[in-house]
Length: 438
Image (cartoon, rainbow, N blue to C red; front, top):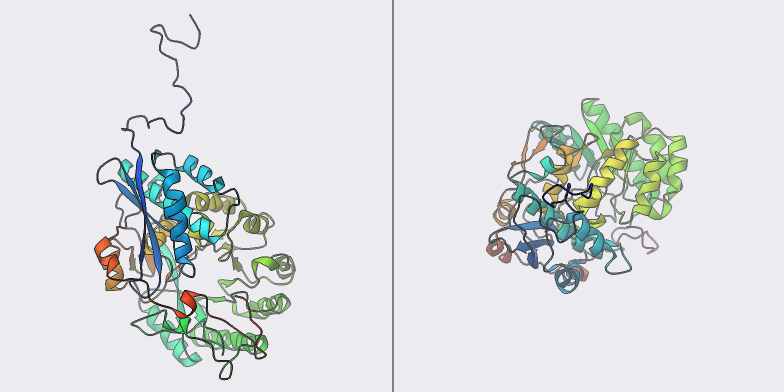
């Protein structure tokens, strides 16, 4: 008798599973449709993917929001990924991700990565529903009860900024990103309550305002001096340079900010200038958070490996979804880097929920960005099951999957708004008219 066979002719162990083989103990299912939904409950353009299956009523949702170029992502989903995925087994998340990632030959970039993310998150959502568990359980289970958040404290002057921080502190929040907008840039601007995105899309009038690096750097230092003097050491303070400064000036700013003991300084340099992080690290102990603009592992692997950063700030849908993000979180753990996933207003509640499930499962969690005001009535109507915010933290609802649903009829009542330049990122320019990144 063959020593690999049992007496009745059955194999001693099962054959190596193939991508199309059914999951043991579950009925095999297939992907029957992939849809992209465009909606803007708060005036910010969101793209959500719905993956339907042959199991009636079983579907998953994922975030594919690239709000500056959403229709390009929708085309990638509907015209390319949908026919590629029909008939595949949604259980095979890793195989589908790898196959879809290389299917375009030229890979990576925010359009293709967001399209892939929408599908990938939806497959994890399906997997959790099939297992009857929240996704964080599939990632190894909880390492904490909830995820501490930081909020944007934005105001027109330092006095108003201090008042806003004190108001948030009454709600249990202790981490704040400080912003008093310098002339000519939208960062730190406060839109109207009816439309938080309003200020982001206002065209720049160079005759009235322009941005210059030195006044901005001086204002940042004055802002931290005021807030630390007023509130002491009981709050954690952050700031986002958003790659605006020339790299050598960013190094100087990080050195000057050491006295104010920041929780982190975000994006002091652009991805194209990553080598300046070595100079910055050698001269300053200010913690660095970076990665919001990264879309390729060649951008973030070296800075993690060489311990040039303290927090990873990637936008999960921009790197391709939950599958690569969980691997990135593990890589960061081995090098003492904590997570601080990007969580702006142009992350849908589905995407934020994916952030949260990683936050709960990762031992090297650092902080979670959360925009204010909290989820509006319109947002909760379109996305039932939004995570709960209380005691300065984000809490999961513990439903199977990612825990957030989509009301398609409600979503249709909030179509995309018409933005200046079709939603392009607002221009920042110097006094002579030169465009400044980003």
